[in-house]
View 1: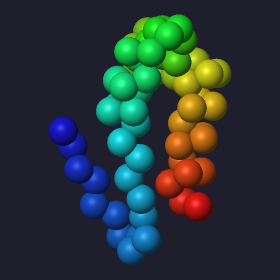
View 2: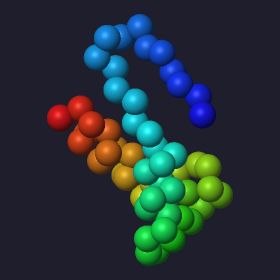
View 3: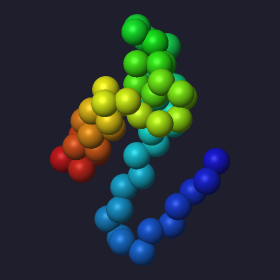
Length: 57
């Protein structure tokens, strides 16, 4: 796993890989959020956006 060190003191890391792995076990399946397993679909982007908003609120 790669850790990123930010020069911004209040930077937040969104662990998207773990989030997508957990969500992949749920219906409708992992292809719903990342059809090729890497690049997010529109639903995957929506999932990332919602998670990012929860992280910074």
